[in-house]
Image 1: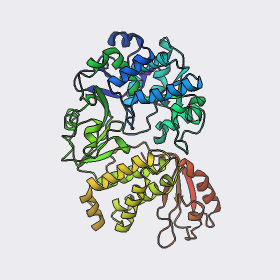
Image 2: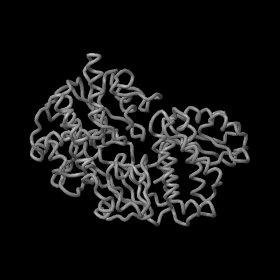
Image 3: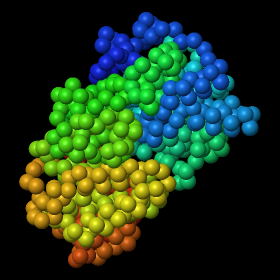
Image 4: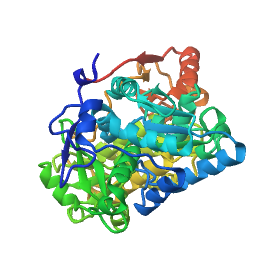
Length: 496
């Protein structure tokens, strides 16, 4: 299949096109089109490239926003100390259902991303470039085609990773490249240190696709021209993924500091009941505050929000906010690696409490327990997944406080759950309870305590439970040992 035969994300812009230059005329920029759209890219030495990244204050354009120059210096320090050339990694594994910006770049403008990676590889004396993409995404076809078109400063390859939320975490990406299970390592490591944290033990410089593309733009424009748009503290443009109800996402390039309301108006959206900024590890903003919110890391932080990976969802007023949040919370709990207490217990407990709240059957004490568990999960996990999930849920409970009160007081807000927050088609493995056979022995909760919860009468609290990959062993054992044969595992999609 050719790259242009795939379904490619739509791109728009507010202001001058930089990352999106040429995409109004070309579905995909092959090397010939890329060189017509973008001026030639000169070389740079190590000191010059680091100085450029410092001058434009280039942050990572993934969720953390860690300064690129600081990360590069750490990797180079390790390389100098050990005499080992570094490895350059392009993280294009987007497991976030609400984000499509890196997918868009790798699918439609792959050479802009590769320009940045190759520039760094040449300046830093890298041994290898590795581009990580999501299996089945357009990048799986587009990136190898782009690599085959161009001269490279070192060997380069593409690695496909499974489509899971935690697959895009930096440690999980490196483990996948090394042929290990694609999950965050049980202990936090730094890729720049090499060893167990790097590709084949080498010092590794990892950034997401947009960061590498921004580096290429800065090298072409120079610091002054690069800073002609954006804010003084955060120059340049940024990519946002604007999600529309029951339609494909829009990837929009905007100058940093652009008001959120202008972006929503351009995309034909209103703040509705509230706006999620930063995706499923982001934060909710009240509808009254959202339009004036400046789309920059500092501007959103001042409102209690976060830019994260730049994913935006405006929640319409005709859907239940708590039901929407509960669906995503359940999915995030199942997407964890299950390697630490916050993921194994805190996130599932919070998801269960939210589901009860959305159904109008929550005990206020249970909800407060969930708040405490999520608060404790922050900064207590092996990776950032518990922190981000807690922020997503806790800000929802605050922004939709009136809905929380309505659901605690009675049957709820009366609005259906329309599924506005995007989620993958449900699939995987589910544990099902046959109530006609279940006798309430409770053995299932003993054999699979991280999966099965018992109600006050000793029966499982739900007839259908999603099984995370790390729970499958216990789930199979529970099915095999149920004394009344009341349990079974079902595989595959369960909704249209």
